Amino acid sequence: MISIADPRFGPAERDAVVEIMESGMVADGPEVRRFEEEFAAYSGADHGVATANGTAALVAALEALDIGEGDRVVTTPFSFVASANAIRLVGAEPIFADIDPETFALDPEATRQAVREHDADAILAVHLYGLPADVRALSDIAESEGVALVEDAAQAHGARVDGQPVGSFGDAAAFSFYPTKNMTTGEGGIVLTDRERVADRAASFINHGRASEDSPYSHERVGHNLRLTSMAAAIGRVQLEALPDWVAARRETAARLSSGLADAGVQTPIEPDGRRHAYHQYTIRTEDRDRLADQLDAAGIGSAVYYPQTIPDLAAYDGYSADVPVAERAAEEVLSLPVHPGVSADDADRIVSTVREALPQLQ
Image 1 (cartoon, one colour):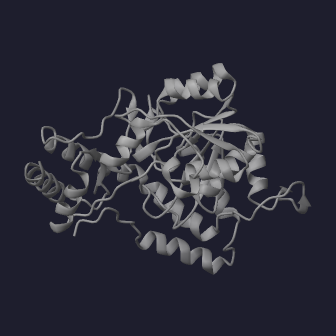
Image 2: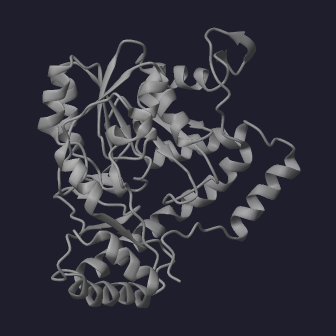
Image 3: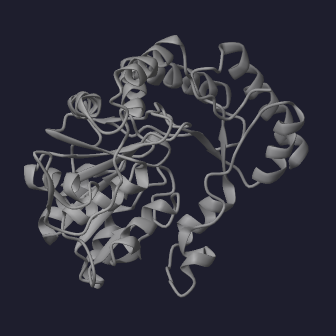
């Protein structure tokens, strides 16, 4: 079976965890600070605040930017629900703008219109599947409209725009280290920002509202316990060293898939000028999505639909309305194929041949 995901752990991760266990410093501590510094440096940001998971990072980023009750945040309807949930969890209201049909990210003009129509306070842009959103355009919109820009980079470790890493464009960014991401800490996340005040507020929010590490009982605000553990950070430091090679492997497999499927009757991922895809997922589009997934499964090839419904169509968002026909159509047609570093060249060729053989039978 060629799996859709393949979390990678080896002796280096085990040794790093054992070292932390033997040190006795297993919760938040120096190892977490080192991981924060290293991941921030890799991503071109001045500050990093590690969190228990990616959703916690999104919430902490919004809180740190003073986004809360009564505020409106324009975001995508086509993402994992955490993107919108984080907005609601800080008391703000998500406003859904439609997406670009080829990149699956926020359409800049739809975003500008939504910001103006709803007098929004922030934009939360998602780098979906590992492809950067049009952050140049979205940054210009945020600046001209006087709103904050938050990058949801949960799926985009290693992605770049004009050579600049994602996570370094907005007022703050959030990454996830869930096991299926391009790198993992087992479970975890991080807030990135160039603004010291934002970093300090995020660090306080995830640590019971503590004023500083030097004053363990000086709680200035109500906060949560959303810290990353030292064991998770130790895994993350090892994985971060391997991340460039893993992203390169994903890109190599994606190129092989795209070449093989170029005239197969499906829409393959694009890479706009200046945008470097990290291929967290390799996502195609076809009207025969569900039947193709069945054919792949029968051939021992994993696939998955990310995401079968737009966020406004979820039960948890009953009462939210959104005119997002492009996103709704994407939800009916997208299918992700295996692209992780465990996919060999032979595996990729097998995926291609299976898709090519299946599609004529489905039409």
